[in-house]
Image 1 (cartoon, rainbow, N blue to C red):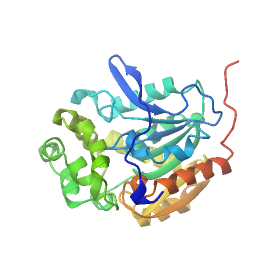
Image 2: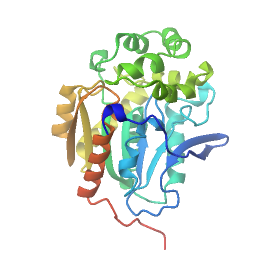
Image 3: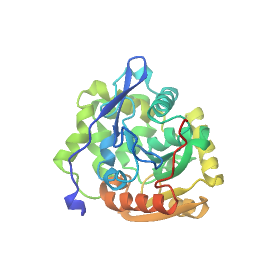
Image 4: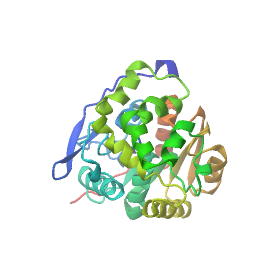
Length: 314
């Protein structure tokens, strides 16, 4: 499907799963009765997206594997909470609860991670390596020792993230900079009005932008926040040392993953197929969904993951 033909439709039903007392995580599940025997493929989005980001990739994968795409808490159709309910610890706890309930016991999974989805997803994977059948990486968060290592950010976003908490809050809550500036700035083609509306809708009420602000506050760079930055260093070391099958998509010029870093990971990640998607920035999924989807399918097949029997209870 050519870029101009990319559908703005969202042809998936949304399910809801309680991950805490009154906290529900919304998600897509293309095989809710678990007919397929391949390891489920879980798609984890970042900030400020939701499962809509994967709409044109999932159809390539769903005929042969169960596809699950949650909305992080505070995003998409998931519960919107007070600001103190977000943050590093809570997001990890919600994701762990979600995966423990949506997957079968001891079931292996393929994680597809992007942006902050990589922060939470790779942290979970490092803690549950026995559950990981494979990893699909794109524009994931690497260690960034300084602000010069944050890639091709727009000046306004860089100023917001690197500035005071007051300026950051004004940019995200009042000016909605992530939706109105960053999204289109990091897609090469022009997003349609319908597509932008899909991204806008969860955050039309400024009160619902608290999740965007709280996640932005833990953007890991230059050693801060210490706990989050340490987690990035830990999963990065784990990524470079393990032999789990990996598929790594990279773009030119990229953003968080610029060319120099893409070449480094292409060379140094073990058991990895590296795929150059071509001209794209941060949201590879919006510019090259068919390439990404078809390559995931080919990789799953070549890695022997399609049709593999699950470990089922007797």
